[in-house]
Image (cartoon, helix red, strand yellow):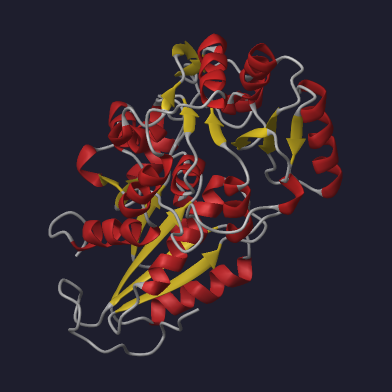
Length: 385
């Protein structure tokens, strides 16, 4: 990690203060396989690649009090401009308040109503980043000041997420393989996916459904988690377990034939970026945050029909608090999902997934994400100074 405490060279990057800019990224990386963990790792790598004599970066693992204390002192010692970016669930105002300098909340949500306290917490930041235009409009509708919200999309690590590269030996078989990656929860649409798979393929063994569904978990919790999946899933399901690095996740995508994503709501939908970048055809709902990725690719994915409904899932409602309801998300239609899966398994796609992969890799990268963040930070009159 770069040590920001020394006096940097000045004047080599247009728009930066003469003593330079220190970006302190605050989040969770260690042991975090969730979308926020992927997002934080990708953004941090690109931020480190963007360093110049005038642009410095620091990372704070906020679950480590000692690291917070050290990095607070590093920020105080820096003589130029300091910007702290919280990249996690929620406003992060309590953590951001501990650091000197400007405060940016880089966050997202999956329904159309923010939980209690989020709007007030976001108001305490100097600016707000969110990955999609949908997310920005949703925050505005909830009362966050429009001029303070900037769209900073996610991306892919282009060195790994490509159509060309190794596959996972453990998945070798002649069967046609659908893949789903995402936490095992109601929001992701697993129940509808399992029902649609049974409806489309019955007991056929030449079609398989590969599932990677881990989130934060202890070894005992993971075993319970796996048992729950297998209890609900059709017999053709193959569960991929264990923590996988980016290269192994990319190999997992390339080992399958189609990515299916029947999500009710997403802040960003990173697996869609990654699957398309690896050359997989995609079946997905088109709603919430991940619609921004899919909209430019009309005709190059199969859309699952949805119905907008109030959020009632206990496994989602238990994480947050709302005084007047959690808003709505989009329920996937089982018949539409089953028909799309049958169509892809039978071949004859009307688009070239590899050509689409090249365009996704060009449009969506972590380097472009960091560029978007720096443009917002350096825009006169938007943030300080």
